[in-house]
Amino acid sequence: MKLPSLSHVLRLGVKELWSLLRDPTMLVLIGYSFTAAIYIAATAMPESLHHAAIAIVDEDGSPLSARIVSAFYPPHFKTPALISLAEVDAEMDSGRQTFVLDIPPGFQADVLAGRSPAAQLNVDATRMSQAFTGSAYIQQMVAAEVREFVQRFRGDAALPVELAMRMRFNPNLEEAWFGSLSELINNVTMLSIILTGAALIREREHGTIEHLLVMPVTPAEIMLAKVWSMGLVVMVAVGIALAVVVRGALRVPVEGSIALFMAATSLHLFATTSMGIFMATVARSMPQFGMLVVLVLVPLDMLSGGSTPRESMPLFVQNVMLAAPTTHFVSAGQAILFRGAGIGVVWPQFATLAAFGCVMFAAALVRFRKAIGLMA
Image (cartoon, rainbow, N blue to C red):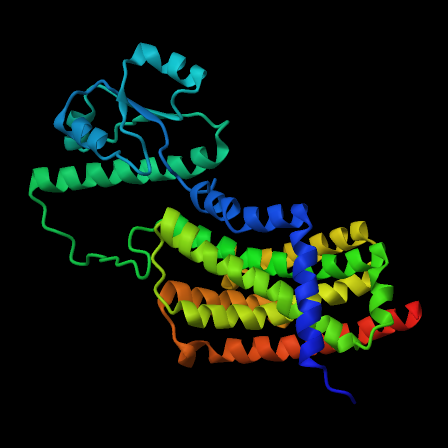
């Protein structure tokens, strides 16, 4: 068996890079995926409560009601607007307020007398995500303020057990930290599959694949050229995204070694670029390849642990997704970037990614040789 020529692989890879430079659509996709897409994913997470508009009707005017008013502040809520009872309907109808909390007269007196007064919370449920999350936040905050006020007023002893919570790796629970890095990891998978697959489909549709068949190059050399060239493009984009978007614009601290993460990315790219070539040999046209990419990318992104913790998934799904490279890349990436893990912790993921890349490359090479044989 003839070994691939490094000279051929290098020259064919340079040809791929020149082809990519002449494809403005792909260049725009790469630029968007590693800049605006990461920034949007980090700063516009709909499930989180961020600067929710709230107004308070303080009919009691007591120290307890003032304490409740002062409990709402950014970043979860905007500074509360104090309005009268007559303004509630107008504020809600206009959409200026998502929540309006009405503290009735005699609220503090009823609380200290041991009665259970009711405070009315009006919610604009058309803002569904904030309405659901914010209602729970407000109930907990009001209950906590009332409980602490009563304990201090009566001089009650502190509870015998106090829960002291300490957040590791993300002390302020900043959604941008998790959202930006998770989006970066997901985009590595998406772009590597699309770039290599589209490159092969493009050559087939333009008829340039026949030119390669008459050249003294082997299928393995053609595949290796696509793998290293498209992988290099994604690696450069990842480095720029980490420096400019994640650490620069979003100011997300990266705990671990960037070099170690880039090493994990290179192993993952070996697997996913091979997967892109395999899918391109299955599809017969660019539209078919696009539909196949959607069918593959959605489960890879949703079930690999980047969007939802794997522990919350059914056991069957967890076991099936162990056969996907994204599961191990997400695990390694999060351990390195979030928790500062070293090679002693993530070497099992590295070994799995390398093994999966070899298997996927071999399978893609068999399919590619078969496809070329049908063209010859």
